[in-house]
Image 1 (spheres, helix red, strand yellow):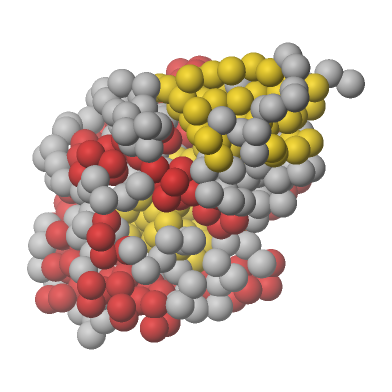
Image 2: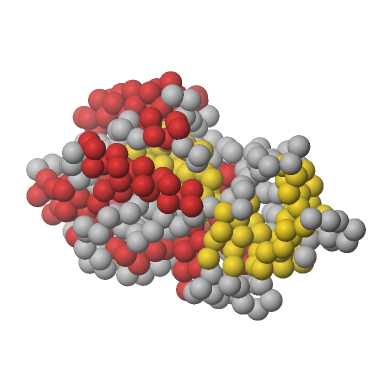
Length: 393
């Protein structure tokens, strides 16, 4: 059996504080055999400058949109981002598949070992079943009209069953508060409780969503009129959009709000009253691309074990890289230490996706992937603009 003994300036294992000049011992297939405090007495030790950490977990991605890279407006707001997607999303099957294959490989190269991927159809399933990445398919359903709830849910359920047939774990999930009805949420809530799958949704990604729930204001009513969708039935809620979703999905085993760009202290407080163990996913580079702002990360300090990181899609990002996402967070909020960022980018996502038995930490018997982060500052405690990820195992 070939064994590798790997050391670096620091090792972030997610099972103990960072180890300075420790040694990670793995089999040639990446299975963790041991984690030592010192390399004293060992021979044939690989030394790397930087920090070792487990493989990254991308908790929120849209592989299906990879062919839209560079085609959508930047920093013009969510509504101006969504309108063109409706018109240009359709493309030849070969074009879509080729872009997805390239995006999947780029994530492998960027040290990503697992992905929670949003999809509206099954076109990506064959690719995912052969990928080096472990995928969880979040089959997204959209249906704002109560009359469409049963039909939309059955369509999502059919795609969900196709995912399971290909041995890909999956969930049926709502798109966002402004695109689903209580009737559709009730079906998702019930089925998630029965089948035990995690649920996620896009949350407070724009001020338009907040305005819709406050007083039917903002630009969403106009967007629906342009699409020919009648929303006369919709009544503003006494809850924020975030709390409204949490209250309607309270039976889900796990629930994750994605983006949270405009979430406030009161929004968060009310949401956790309905769902105390809510996960929060940040995709800051997509937020900058679309809304030219990021969430107030300081509002989420009470949830260190339930913050995850996503890349969103190549329609809203320059690259699918979890390292680039946490570099942005570090730039936006320098009070967040590297150990926390790595935990968000690895262990927390693995736990949310139900993959923590094999990913997310350097524990004996796990096969979590081994990443090296180079070009760090402050004795290896701080990311820099030049920091890079190198996949070692």
